[in-house]
Length: 179
Image (cartoon, rainbow, N blue to C red; front, side, top):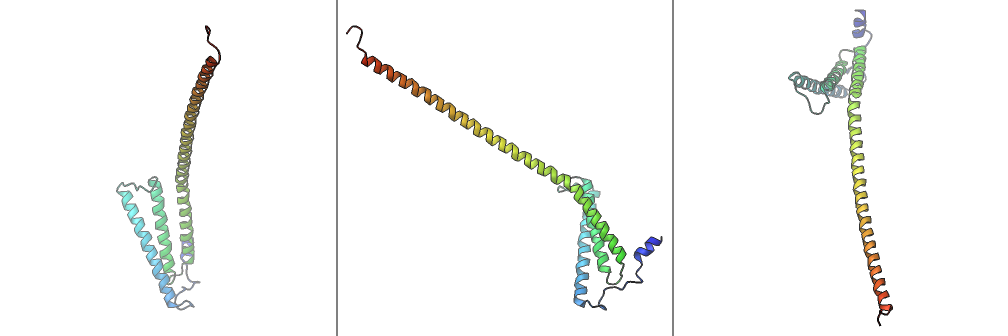
């Protein structure tokens, strides 16, 4: 229980609000962006969880575990943004550090879940490229073989014609047998 008290204890910290050196416009811009980030990530989380709760399977996720991990990531990131917005009135720096660390850990978990998907797609792409290259080489080899066979047939025909011409010339040169 003391750990929780220590985590949320703010007595020694002052909020970094307008009373400090920060301009009021910058404070409000930071607050607005943090709240908007919280709302966006929270909305994404709610939509994903509702979709999964109703039995849906998003096409861009490998499985429900990956979708849940992504929902956890958006939820924790949204919470981190909300805590950052609250820092101007409630300086819970330790809690903010905890939410940031949890968000980082969940993000690396999502990366670990997505890595096999990326590797699988990369391997399939390489396999398809290798298959296409092999098909191209086979087609070119068949075309070259067919061309060589045509050349061999032309060569045989030319040799046959040369042989016929030589035979005809031999017959002209040699006098006939009864002549």
